[in-house]
Image (cartoon, rainbow, N blue to C red; front, side, top):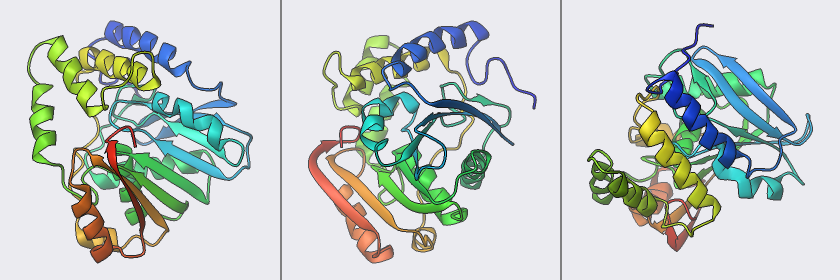
Length: 274
């Protein structure tokens, strides 16, 4: 499989600088029992396994640019009952190495299905946050055979459309100035406390912003009603009240389009701190 040494980064050197930050933030997670680089038609996908082979599998998909490092505080709570796999989504900063762009939602679902197959997993409890939630929903709708259940945490453009507030905030990321970008990322992450895990994740996102140049993954287009309604595995949706979409409208849509889905709303929570 031909892969680029840069894999979306501005240069080999910028990737190396980013990975130094990545390794430091990743070290906040429990030590994995195994590290997998799973080949897919789109590139090598890095997966960290916590727990022994053969356990009930829980697979965690991160939000945009946060990498598998965002799950550091959740892994220990899950490994007493499950074997936990945290994924660096392909086409984003992290330790995965892309060889071919994913251009559609089906590409994303196919890539994830190939990862699960490469790990030999079935009966997977799939958990996705934000962009990871959108990816999980697309997989559940298109290639559900390996899935036992899906949990969508603040899934982007899935049950509710991105709000005008999101577009205003996102536009600021395109303007020059590191301080402006940091303030914008801090708002999206709910202004994390200094020294917290989210503070470290924010540092990782900022490092990606200066090092990463291209996106090998599609924009998460709003999922239409028929596709949501077609999902035939158990789904629960966890939503925040102070976030990048109208969660109340999202719950109304769940009740109308996918009434078997479970859902819960935390009115004061933010997009990341659910």
